[in-house]
Length: 151
Ligand code: CMP
Image (cartoon, rainbow, N blue to C red; front, side):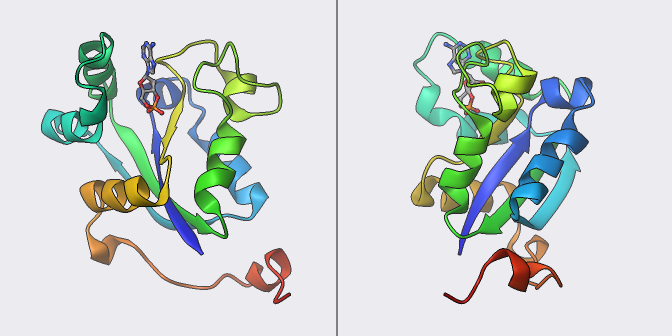
């Protein structure tokens, strides 16, 4: 079982796409372990995107990500990190395949609707940056035994 951090970015928020995108993750069988709305502090966004600090788009990315409230989620399931990234498609919506979230809903590199962790270590760090341990809930859904077999 893996956990991954998802951010519904300001373009998804302003375009009223959160429900439709979250449905894609639910349809796949992933379980919501945490969910919240927040206006992210600039310092938190700067830390989250510190790896891009030297890139020319860093300043505009931080402006964008603090321009409206965002919805943060922790999703869980077997191989959740790779599964979510495959569901999202390529970073640039113009290059993302049809059928993926960005391929179906986006046309831009920066306004790419959703952020998702890219590996187990970043997932751990990002979840810790955005959520307190008590905000993450372990539970079972009635449907879980029909989504993942014992085999
Ligand atoms: P994300 O997966 O959140 O990780 C870094 C973000 O930077 C990325 O999604 C895009 O929103 C943004 N990004 C990546 N490349 C570019 C670029 N060339 N120009 C502007 N924004 C970018």
